[in-house]
Length: 302
Length: 223
Image (cartoon, rainbow over all chains, first blue to last red; front, side):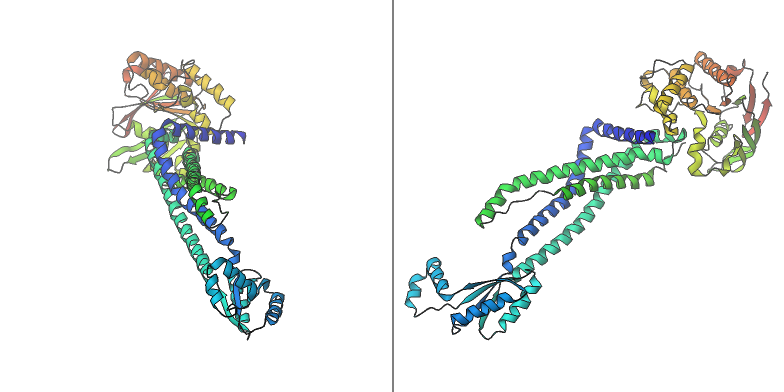
């Protein structure tokens, strides 16, 4: 058993030595792999950031109810309590028409225009936050309130959130597809590199076969080489993503500040990093596996 | 130990390399396979090492019918067979030590065992102390001896050699042949293909003469 692990360790050490022996060629190959891995992984990080951002817009599920002008404020208050008692409503904020007018006068800049009007043109209003915040639920609550005779207008701001979520879901799917294609690309690049390596080392393979090397024994160094390529590519991809995030950090926080948001770009999570590194290594192994299965048999002693 | 029964070998081009070869080499015997180039000496050795399969007839090595060895079992079969090549077939990106150690590593020997056997094999061919050298820095004769050490290191029962002295001058050739004779004295079965009759003239071992794919003469050893 120990011997077995010793052989594997030797293979790994040998693979790393071979990569180091040709730094430029290795760097080029690893760079190609890294870019192909960084694209889907980076997009994934971006999409998950957008997801966090849209998740922060829970309040966007809130909607506003305007009562008819002739509804007395006491009645409106009573309705507010009734609505607040509904199980599918999380909270209700009552905005009485007097406060609304004060606010409007203070913030809108139409103060003098309002003075010209007779009385208060603003109705009592409610800001309602549905219980779960889920888009489907919002519609149900809104419909129920719309049916009340006292209701003048229900203003739903959630449609664009729904659209954004749908777009995010679509982009997640597109990133999934890109991931599959680029992963395939990585496996092929590594497979091709290993194929060339097999050609370069055909003398060694032939001699090894002649002195009784099993297919497994001959294949293993190439599998480890593929593994090293994949892992090195994944590590470089990780660094590329970190660098990109570092470059985007300050413009993003500037933009966020303009929107009064505390949003900051998050780097890849531990899980995402783990998947990237393991995925890279696995793709390298698989690519090498394909190449060896296909090409090792061709090298027979002559 | 090595037994050919009416063996034919026809290559893809239609050339008949062996046309009914029959012989038997006993355990512990040393036999020379002679004959002009193109007579089929290499083919005989290729059939023994399972590099090729006979078109017809039976090849038995170590009481094992080689026709019954499937492809995936060939490596294990070759691990018990020592093969020496005319062109050494050394790996030039590795040290002498690593070249000789290769079959032992393949067989899964422990580090200590490998170390012991590599040194013993190099000692037998007179190259102890050259372990760390790359083969390219050695002379042709020394490289051939590294190849022989590699074939010997796993202590095979049977050793076959294809023109092992083909590229060597007469003195070195005689030295190599003496080396093989010494292995034979400790019980290794050897079959050595050579076209150099002068070289083996003084040696008292059995000679199989192959001409045009047939055994033309089989002269027993002198002892």
